[in-house]
Image 1 (cartoon, rainbow, N blue to C red):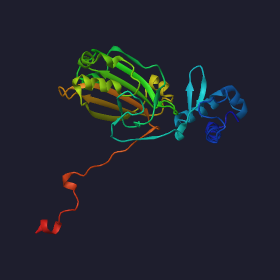
Image 2 (image 1 turned 180 degrees about the vertical axis):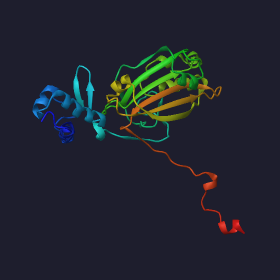
Image 3 (image 1 turned 90 degrees about the vertical axis):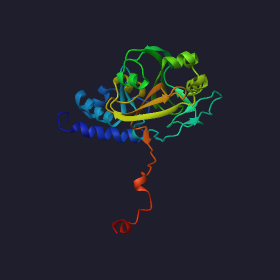
Image 4 (image 1 turned 135 degrees about the horizontal axis):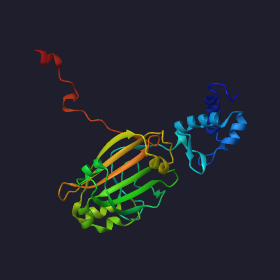
Length: 271
């Protein structure tokens, strides 16, 4: 049996069925590779190929020094993402909730949040923020998600030096989300206006580890540029990285003037 071609696909199908049937709950480990190889009468390489199939599907996640962890997979909570920015009312601290988050729910941090001066070495983000590549700016780094869900997104914000000079409080940890944006606005940059750029890509290893996803699962990268009303220049750039199986983009399409209804009378145009 160990040498039967395609045996790993049969094992992957059986393991998939067992996971979806609830034999191993999300967040728990699959049995050790050696134990499962003995159970199925195959060598470790064949068993590893079967598990790799499930990892590519997003059902399991290989965690260094821990083993193979069952993910929420394709049944993980998905969230529609529109284009509305809401006031955050889940805490007493003023702030904003951006698309994918509700202004009435509490999101938690999955790692310790940080805010410190760092060099912005990404040329694309530096260009969007309007600073030289390698310039030192304030960086706020978060991994967040609703309280009852696994990590939903990485939030990586870079604040222009003039914003930090006007509102040093942006380095503080606010009780609620988006509070640092409120500080910038109160310092004279409000109301901030935002524009987003979306693209799909594969995650870096560090991103996959933070989001608890396999490196084979694509992510949605959203870069938000906040523009100051004070001078019309970028005041902050935030990059969100979200697993592709966690979000659905919802866009309301608008008709161009030339596509307005009703259609013009074509007979009259021809005459």
